[in-house]
Length: 229
Image (cartoon, rainbow, N blue to C red):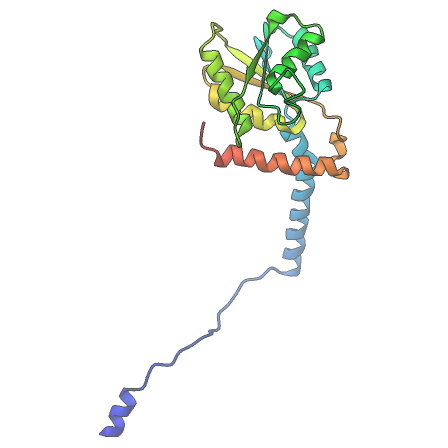
């Protein structure tokens, strides 16, 4: 009787591993998977620049919004675009200049670019600087938001605008302006060509690789993680 009770009091066995079936790729399956991955990498490398450096202007745009941090050669391109289009006004945006503030009469990129347009021959009454308040993050969004505030306090009744930016930064700026302005205002985009690297072979330049990676990450953040707009 005692022997039977002892058998009943035994603890259950603990199993740490077990046998089970598992599906794995065959040699042909691995070959197809590797080929597919290689194709996707190749496609991304050859198309990511054209995707980010988008040019899709509104033909009837009345205002050309130019990001103030652009280099001088891009400002010259923007001036050519203004003269060949049907624009009434150039609006420059941009935040505080973080270096050289004590040496310059201009305290932000919006004013610097507006002055540059005037120096290049654009009439003073056709360019307006809309400075962006000092922010430590989401600067492109802040510029778009400040433009929207300025526009709401102006007498302009706009149907469409074009945002003029540089190279692969354009896609992100276009996205943010569209988030804030549509459907009331249609927004187009124009990308100035960079002189820092060859866009057709950006992977062969350290500046190109850094710029593409930074802007791709920033666009993903603005597209999927930034819920302000």
